[in-house]
Image (tube, rainbow, N blue to C red; front, side, top):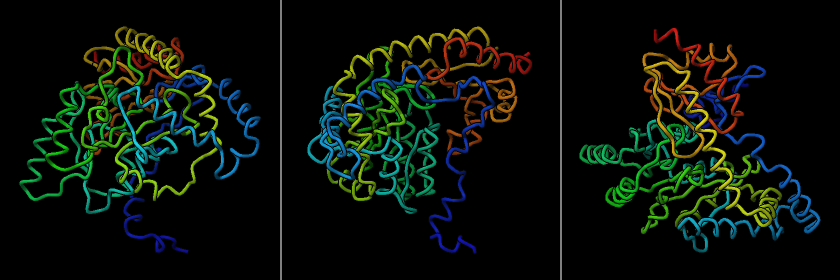
Length: 397
């Protein structure tokens, strides 16, 4: 049977893209995982989560295992609102939607706001899974360059003016990761954030702010775009994946009630009562402020360890951006194709993500790669970078 005939044209077009996760390397056994963008095993609060789940079942019995009815699951939204308030983000009634991680939030936004006639603007480079999502809904994707200060809003302004003058469709929204950007680690300064908000009013687009790493600052972070938003232009996508546990799949969208209502219209999973209720108990019994401070300290030490290893083992003219928080460092390797080199790196027992996967036009990313300092143990990070240096040295003699 030829099942292609059952798919509508938009799905056929989406299926021509690379499959989800095509960027993930198949890792050999004992490989040092500098590719993994998730918390180290010892930073996941497994025992506290186990205690929270046990306490929940004792308290609510069968309720968290039903579709609806768990008081604890219902409480989670208020706890997240309180957390956002501490970061300068006030959400009113109907202005917050709990999602299954940030990716579901991004997909709901794209599903509700994009079609083949719509355009979306993204950073270049950007989070590869968001790029995968947007490609499922439209081919009209604008990519705006990033520099050492994140999204270049002056270049965005010029592109918008050119499109408007040419009668081309303007973006429905700009997707940005302004704080500890994935993959570059850059942070957009306050001036650019304000400029982006001004442009959203001038050219009538929304801003989708992905703030997955925003709390993991080595020093004081910049105010989020959402905290600066006076006109309900920002859809703020957040997650507990980077600061608690990714497997719990707790994320959210905060924004204008009319938009949140539309996203909820398409969200047909009836939430995830057990994981949401368990997270609520965890947050009640484990102060998140203390945990985030611990994570900031630990990740700063990890970054410093990786930085020293990069300086010691990578030959000139290789360079990298110095992140001020988050998980990642973005490395530039002139005149090399990091996708081609990956097979050799894996054979030496170290992994990374080739830069091409973070670009709309993949040829722009051939000389880059992303390393993570969040997952591997410190001594393994050093050894992994040493192996990369050994691999790369012959190319720069």
